[in-house]
Image (cartoon, rainbow, N blue to C red; front, top):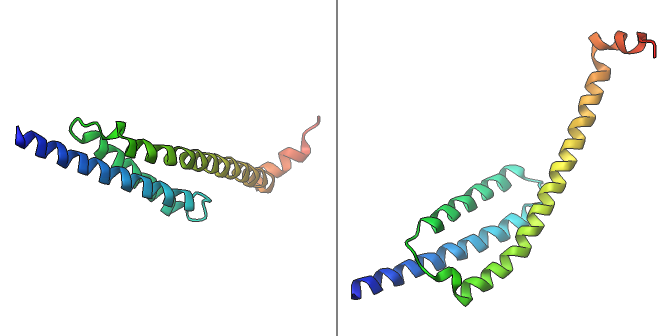
Length: 121
């Protein structure tokens, strides 16, 4: 029985550490969510995904239900919402920019230039 208690304590310790890292990475993601450095942002998203996998792979434990973890989650949720909002805004802006560039490419195309102006509407 003491061995089970030791394993449980170690699992809780690992869970606490992983959740704290998850919180720290979420803070970093929020800093870089302005998309000025999209490569770093994507790297941080990947690292956070790896942490989620590690958290899920831990043996059954009740750390997530603890007051400590619930307090972390309450801090993480608003940051996640901001990150998602900023990411969506950046994606929409990027799509608009790409559409604008494509429209100039269409107008500037040598092959299409004559057909666009010679059509009768």
